[in-house]
Image (tube, rainbow, N blue to C red):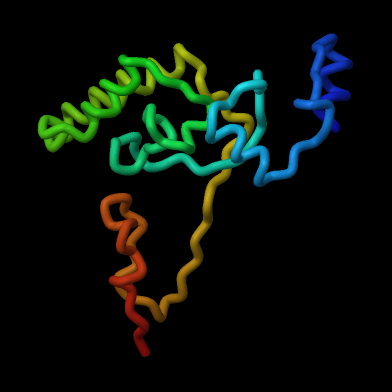
Length: 147
């Protein structure tokens, strides 16, 4: 309700969909089906390390979690380029990522309201701890307890 009151103070007409708060499961179902009736919605989700086709479903046309139903040919081509054979060249992948990032900033499809950082604390009794992004997918399988 805070957003309704703040919108009113700013002179922005803000209304609840169907004049009521939405139950979470219904809200997600409506957004994943067609998203009709929503101009703006607020939610929380995590973004991935890189927007490749393997991990960035929320940016691809056929993924149900593309809740904003943002679909453009350019966006799809840029994301696919990040998973292409050429993307095994890190310089190419970084160049394509910057193109995609510039495109998304221009489109403002997603407007983050806040960010969160994680802090990890590890005991000195653990070996093989690494927060290197390239090792993050299997972080826990490499950690060992020492005496």
